[in-house]
Length: 116
Image 1 (cartoon, rainbow, N blue to C red):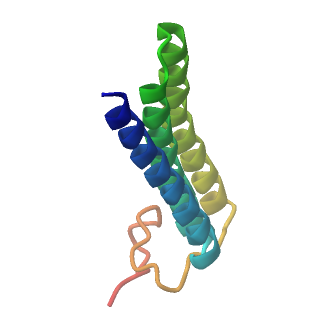
Image 2 (cartoon, helix red, strand yellow):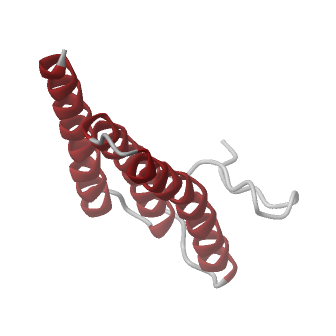
């Protein structure tokens, strides 16, 4: 039974690490700050949750599991909220959108950004 937990833990941790690496590639690949924030927040948050789930499978003390679950929950809440605030601030500071952006949902309704 322990071997099954070890394999499941390894799969979760390696998958989580792969998501974090993909987030790094997204930071390098994407054009504007908004796309980069999206890549960093979504993939890293999911990656940290997967690594935490894999680590929980390796822990035996209930107190350690509670601490790890609490850390994962705080990551799940704080990272998206922080990136949302950062993106709104960047938008209101006048950061240019990528040329591939078709719809600007925060623009004035009279704006025709993204209109065909």
